[in-house]
Length: 286
Image (cartoon, rainbow, N blue to C red):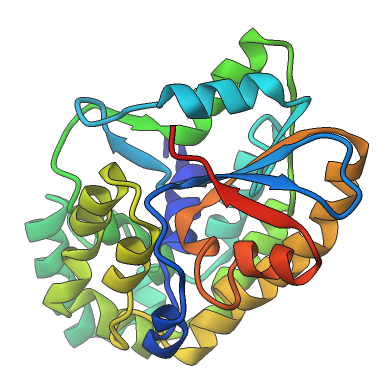
């Protein structure tokens, strides 16, 4: 499973929160923000990624590249260069329940038909993987292209070219545990058999090109796509953890934070949580 950690990261980042919270969000047509004030000596940056795009549509804007180059460190959700990351993911998959252990015979027949239509693969071929991962793979099946580019990989390349260090803000183990706690069998099945589930990724990519954070959040507001438990474990807890760690990182050096765009917006998003701590978070338009 090439780039499996990015596939899982994508699944985590696609979930959004309730309509009531989004209505109070200030309109921003930018996914890059400067972080200043509250005693910081140097400017840090916050960038919302969509994790992957078709190569033909991919664009790393100059303002993003320039912000990376001005920073002393790049911080992703997980450490992109830790050799243990992929091993932990594969071990997690191997130790989890197989698809045939999670579904009864009728459910297997139904999901087999879905997998053949969406992925061109059978349930038997994917039996070693968990239902959660199957859902992740189905979620990105709406990206109809062979050649894809990964934002994290491109950011890491720029950092390396400029001798900028990189790190992760949470462990892959915690990320996998969050995914496990966030959902259950019935929730996953309700997602993958809902037509709107397959519209999310194409629509997110369209909104991403215009850098409209509100549109990105609103696309994911359907209750059939994310329930209260998913909100808690995939966004709320993780965002709160990150914004407790970010101040010390920014205090020590200018840091470029690259997180899934869905972590940025709304009242429990990283932007608002940093503002609540006294930081000035300003959109960068060009």
